[in-house]
Image (cartoon, rainbow, N blue to C red; front, side):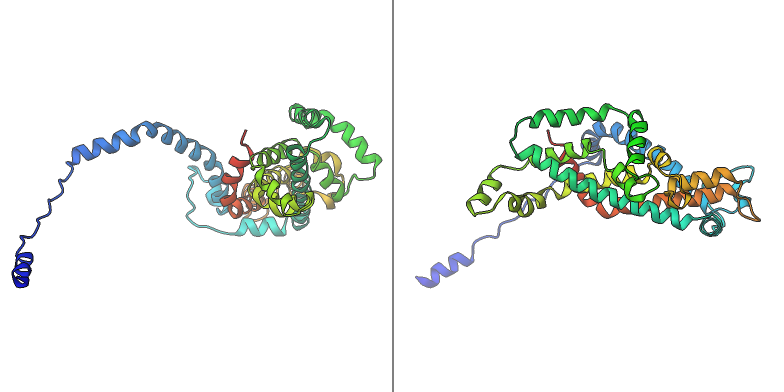
Length: 312
């Protein structure tokens, strides 16, 4: 009986699988077209804007690598046929105090980034998590200063800096450039408001005080928003011109933007095979390099921090 059952089990006919039907190429194309066609126009517009904004940057980079012959030929072109670093060598050696300008810009920018990011984080936490009389009135009054142009109070700021002895001083320039806290505070406040209150309640049950809650619980959760504030501040301070020109008279303390304008506008800078146009392009590329590198280093945090910091 056992052998009969065994033979019956082994003699079962094998099952045959069904062959999947192939989608016709026309139907596949229609499916893909229906999926991506609504976004095609938007993608083309974005590509056009990308090329439109990147073309001047690409032109500056290629111009900095061209010789004088290529720069002033009858039919200019974007490509570089004989690249050379002569313009960069000229910008570093012939421009007076170029390394000093670069050093001053780095000191002022990093100082302002650290000061403003720290103050904005503390202020944003206070406006979002602490309850005190006049909190909303103070916050919205500070937000109103976004609509006041910086040039409107430039003379008053000049008189104040002169009275405090902070003119022609890099430390004073750092303090002056760190004064605009409205937008950074708004970003940090929204980032703290997006965090659940249960985190603080659990920390209080564990015996944490207010500073420990801020330092060990809340601060690591808003790192992305802090990166956004730091990046915005870096770009703004690195390219600052009007306030720096007003507060600094000493050429040894010029930042990069002021120093390059003064140098390039005071001389033609044409010596031998070097040309002022190529030298300016090389200097501008070197001036923009820190901003690009700073963004590339922090880009993984940028979008996430921007979304969390601007959550309404």
